[in-house]
Image 1 (tube, rainbow, N blue to C red):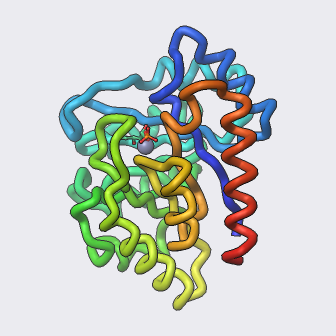
Image 2: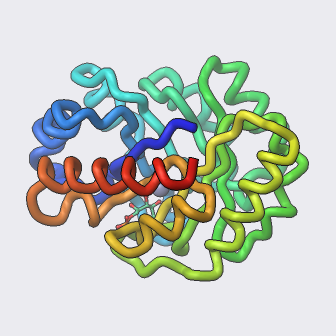
Length: 224
Ligand code: DX5
Ligand code: ZN
């Protein structure tokens, strides 16, 4: 299984975004988590296509776009055009989730489906053969810096079991409240793509990335 730290640029210093992306690339970060919020599906508004298009010019990282947007089907092609390598939509935001996943794949990128903390795994388990990744939100989507919701650990476990039972090639991503303490919990439960905002950007970026990557690899070795 491939383990990756996916820094969420929502916590970046936007005045130095390009520079911070370069630092992460130098430290070997492969995935960049890009949180798009519309002020409707979630209360806050973040950024959209122009920002992604502009960082795409300077970066070869895998752009993992998390759409916290109502009816995201409307924007799939736009996000592919501005540089997304993967698009994740929320199960709660799509009228026809199967169709949304199909549209993402037809546009030529990887497809993820995300569930909020209160949404059961059962709501999306029938789609596991159709997606590349399931994103388990471990806080309420909308803001960085929140506390990990413990009840979500069981959902990660349940998903990992379902994926292994059917021998599927599906990544489990977690997002929200990942830090020094919760990192181990989520890896042990079965997550392999770890989104982190404040944990990565608070303090010295380069040394945080190095420290987190090292810790992630150490724990991952003991669960494989
Ligand atoms: C929350 C976003 C997250 C957020 C994570 O809605 O999807 O990606 O940036 O931030 P931390 O790691 O600080 O909880
Ligand atoms: Zn996110």
